[in-house]
Image (cartoon, rainbow, N blue to C red; front, side):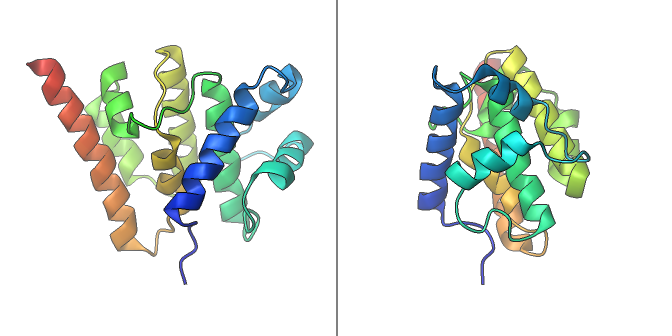
Amino acid sequence: MSTSPPTDTLYATIGQIAGVIASPGFPTANRASLRRISPDQPLPLTFYRFATRHLPEGWDRSTARQRDWATIVAAMAIMSPNAHRPDVGLGRALSEAGFSEARLERLLQSTGNTRRTLLLRAARFLAAKNQPCNWVDGALFLLIPAHDFERREQIHRKIARDFYAASAQTER
């Protein structure tokens, strides 16, 4: 049984999260609270309120899954209102923003809380460069469990392929 959501559902969920967080009606204090989420700290009540309203069923199936979703929401809040752009893969966005190859390698090789922390750092980097990305890539990066080696490698290959394809374009 797969523990990551079907891609169609994930696309809809990511689009909804991006829309809600970027909405002018979304309270600034809630957005700020979501931005401060850290993988190694207790989750704020704001996250639970957001999660019960906007995340898919099963978001809290395990502590690790809860932390993954909290990281996704935090990263999108950090980048809001310019977080999600479906036509720009995470790897391409990182490359176009000037993310180093060494940082990408460390991100792709990470696990657990280190993986979450490094993804949040990448989101801060992208936010500083005003570079949106397809957050479905970021979500899959976290939500595909480590024991699903094949699928995890697929998302790593996609991110790396997009990164190097964008790098090759800028070198021309």
